Picture (spheres, rainbow, N blue to C red):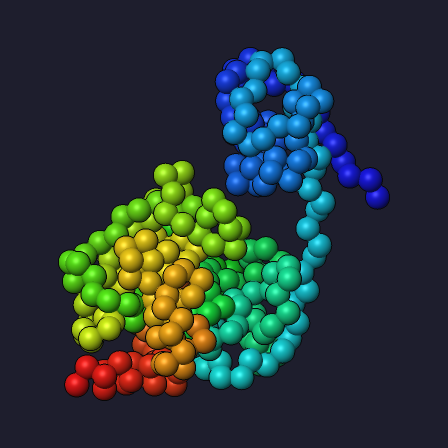
Amino acid sequence: MPAEVRSLPVPDGLEGERVDAAIARMFGFSRTKAAELAAAGKVTIDGSAAGKSDRVSGGAWLEVEMPAPPRPVEIVAEPVPGMRIVHDDEHVVVIDKPVGVAAHPSPGWTGTTVIGGLAAAGYRISTSGAAERQGIVHRLDVGTSGLMAVAKSEIAYSDLKQQFRERTVDKRYHALVQGHPDPLSGTIDAPIGRHPQHDYKWAVTAEGKPSVTHYDLVEAFRAASLLDIKLETGRTHQIRVHMAAHRHPCVGDLTYGADPTLAKRLKLTRQWLHAVRLGFSHPEDGRWVEFESTYPDDLQYALDTVRADSA
């Protein structure tokens, strides 16, 4: 099937705008997607190839080769070894997610998912949200373990999404980071957006979304520090990006510049990051509920090792 191409004249009101900004306004894409289309050579102005940072003129014809519609993602009911049910009632199920498990299906992901694991265990969850992520009100990275809440009722889905939007949910993580942050307790307030060179990474960028991370020292070691981290916002890879930007990446996080030698010695194959506590107002009656998770074996081994090295 031939690609769909759409052409529109640039309104005078967009005179002088960047190509990616003009595409976003005229065709309804996100600016990130618009930039990707331009970088892939799928945008022309009056028949000539246009880069994302080129400027448009009023009345010029902007032509875009439209991306193919996404293929539907299938939810596969598949048991998830090690996934523990922490709490279950008619509105909410709280799980302790093991490392290596995605929150929901996505294009290109062939591993297990929280949604698939709950389906395999016979759980019925909310039908709200996109088809492949029904019931999901927040996520953890594949390489991050710990607590997640999944909505079972429509009331819970709406209520929990609102709590996350209003930032009233208490999300706490523990992270073992390289070195010793200065100050030892503080706040990182830096916008996060797509990495300018690597589409699988995120970075602190001027054009990113507001992102705030609060951290407190729990324990200091010779080569690393254990931090208690509270998120005020919930950007993708937020803790990993913020700590790496401050030259203290999570131990084992090779994607964001962690020392591979240290990771190998600690037998880590992922970032040392765990969602240890999750608290929210219960959707049924507003009472505050809070849940905690212990470290999985690989993180506990690494922590014990750096602690012993500092003795």
